[in-house]
Image (cartoon, rainbow, N blue to C red; front, side, top):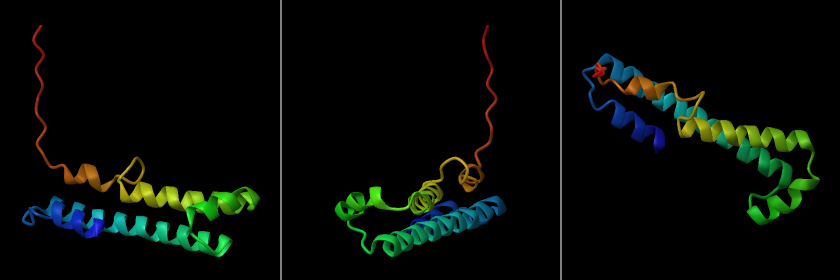
Length: 107
């Protein structure tokens, strides 16, 4: 729903080519975020057999360090893509089509 909402909000000005490009980019980056969150969730289920916080945090110290790292990186990339943070924010500046204002400083 986040990807569709971003697409619809950004592509509101459908006559502008840049708005259409950034809307498609927003949808794709949100799908990347969904993919990594899903991979992290399935890795968590595969490694622990459960997604309950109490169980996950009680078993986590006994897991292999590489498994915890992979799960954490998948969740991190997924969350960064969904919230358009640094590195995966490419579509956000494209969506800001406002004209630059010149700033004059008075001395």
